[in-house]
Image 1 (cartoon, helix red, strand yellow):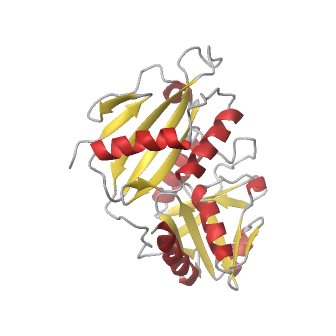
Image 2: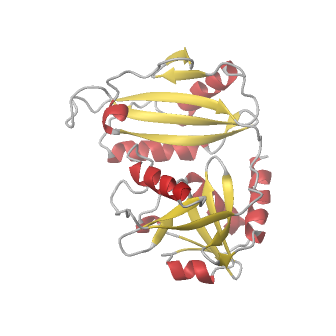
Length: 281
């Protein structure tokens, strides 16, 4: 396997040892955001949408990002790392923005630093899982809506605990719920429900993550004559659905095979995945 490289705020380093400063506020306080970006044919996918969401999230966190934090800037840095790391097919990128080191809960500065890492993937296209995921609801903790709900902040313990409990129960995932029992998302994905050929997904106002792949799939469906509605999703909607699938930037589409005793097909999942791969070229 080729040696991988990272970019720590402009300094390119080999990813074979410690590369993060001990005083990093993302490490100390979760004071940062991140984006996970898929690489296809050696190029980052949907990069502009990822950068836009990251910068919007940084503004919500009252971080001051420099004017040169643009899509073109990060694309140049990503492509450099991909080339150095010999990733010319499938892969993934993680970009972090953290508040500059200093202070405790009250920072001494709202300026930012960035960190980029890359890794290869075996597949150079999106591939549907061969076995449908088994899911249930996560009720040990609830997701409360706030102004950060739609962004990928480094406060991810809700998702970590959900994924751990799913593993303990022998399931593939547990779906995150709000205080009223509404279903928002998976532990690392957005949620879609299919009924009578129509897609339903929780709206951003419900408090779900504003996933880049979520928006890509919504637009792709509409472009191909498939109706999409953003609405609240309750447990009874899962029981009445014909199909359920999850989406994220790295895996694309994950079809759900079952929720408790309910079984699902993957007709819409397969169709949309084919369209997605066509769109990616």
